[in-house]
Structures are given as C-alpha cells and as structure tokens.
Image (cartoon, rainbow, N blue to C red):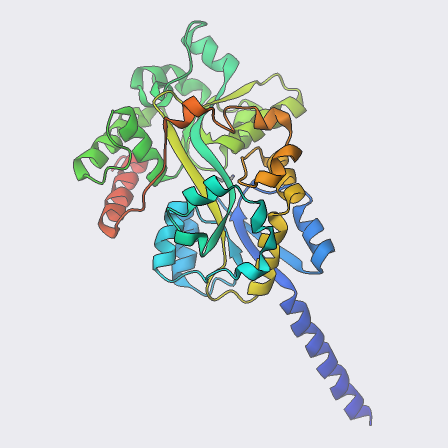
Length: 362
Ligand code: N2P
C-alpha cells in the first residue's frame, strides 16, 4: 500500500513537472528592449512562466538559430537576418488564428516587413528604429565649438573630427552589416551594394578612424553615455533615448541627444518569430498576441523609447515619444532612410573578414 502510494505520488509529481515545463515560455530577446512589467503581466494573464535571456547581436542569435535545439520558443531577429533564417528553415509559420490582435497592427509597416517575410507568414514586428548617432551635447560642443552642427556622419567617420573627440570616448556598434554600409553611404556609395570594392572602401573608412574609437559594442554605450563615460556612440535610436532618460533620472547634468544624420540612416524592423523546434509554440503565440495588445505594446514603447508598429497603441504612447523625430522620423527624414537587403553567403564572408580587420587592425 505504502509502495503504491509512493508510486502514485511520484507519478503525480512527474505529471506536475511536465505540466510546469509545458507552462514555461523561453524568450531570447535583445537587451534593454522590454518594459519592466511586461513579463509579470503576461504570467498574470496566462499562467505561463517566462524565462528571459538577452543578446545584443544578430550574429549571436543567428548562430544559435542555425545550430538548432536552442530551447527557445520566441526570438527577435532583425528583418534581413530573419529573411535568411526563414530560407534556412529555422522558423515555423505563425498560426494566425491564435493572433487576433494582428488587427491592431499598422498595415503599411507590416507591408514593409513583408519585403523580408512575404505575407508576414513567420513574423510580427516587435519594435522598429534607426541606426544613428547618440552624443553628449556639452562634451561635443566643448571639443568642436558652439557653431558645429551635429547633423552628419562626419562626427564618427571624419578622422579629423574623431581625433578631437577621442579623449571623451567614441564607440561604434559591433554590427558589421550596419557599420560598413553606413560608412559606404557616407562615401556616397549605395549602402546596399555588394560590390567588393565598395565594401572594402567602407571598411577602409572605418579603419581610418579606428585609432579614435574606444570600443565596438552594441549595449555598453547606454550606460556609458548616460554616465558621461563616453561622449559619442553610433547606436540604435531607443537605446540612445534610454541613455538620455537615465542621465535625466540620475540628475548628473549629462545631456544626451540622438541624430539621424542628414546623409541618411538604416531603418530596421525587429521581428518576433518562433523557432521550428520550439518546445512551447502555443505559449509563444500567446506571447506574440499579448504583445500586440495596444496597452502592452504602448507600455513597452513608453519604457524603451522604440517605435512600435501597432496602430491601436499610438493614442496610448507618450506624446513626447510620438512627436520625437528621432523615434518617429518626419516625412522628410524618412526619404533618407534605407532598408537593408539580405546578403548572399559570399558577401557575408567578405563582411565578416573586413570586420575582423576593422576591429583588430589585421
Ligand atoms: C535593443 C536593441 C535593439 C535594436 N537594445 C537592434 N535591432
């Protein structure tokens, strides 16, 4: 009898464990990219527990996705990387019957994202933004003069200018498919060119300013800008605004601004997608639908300062954010934005090789 009871208890405990496991959603998202209460609210609404890991590089995410068996149920690649990963069979088609909140999405932006994922079959826009420049207003003015207008990529790509800024700290994203095209664009070349000579020219420009760059990293600059430890960063729109907000909160006298340079900038979409081998795709669908709730996505935008693509959420987004041209670019600025195209394997290898050279000088 006793034995039987124990067996029954073990069976019960095992069933409980399986059930607990089934009710876990494993998310892999960009760092500094969600509101403080989003996961808590999701668990309260659905009973699904969340484990949440972060990355700051598409290359890191892509390596995990291509290797397979990541254990993640939901990931957030940028649109061009997503396109290549879809082709590699990494994701499962979304079951749109489980996503009634798709009705909230902005049709024009979803049509833009469909250039990478036809029919929006595998993905939904999480947030979008631009890759521009964040800077410490006082530190830059002190070094370049009152009359210097910060409106150009020259701030980070002109060796004479970066030499004057080097002492206060200039950083760049560790994102080769964003930095090399930005340099090419500054040179007047097509940022999407896959011509080897063009890519080499972009890399050579980066090498020419390399001695004045303190580091290449895609997340460190938020706190460094906010604390005044660096003064210029090529960065992602919302991350720079988060630095600005942190400095304001700290009342440390640091004023941070974000500029989309006049030569233009990359506009990107970060996409929620479900790995084909996700252990819990139902929970992932529930989360995607939850994020598409107007209030939830407005809460995220209000916290991370990134634009979302949820039309229904707009009235709930802080007007300070919707009216900021750094977050929602003006029609005029939109003309200067470019979208990235996915690289073929050969171009990808070239970029990787050039990037190693830029970073290490070899
Ligand atoms: C959030 C960075 C997301 C932008 N820290 C990268 N596409």
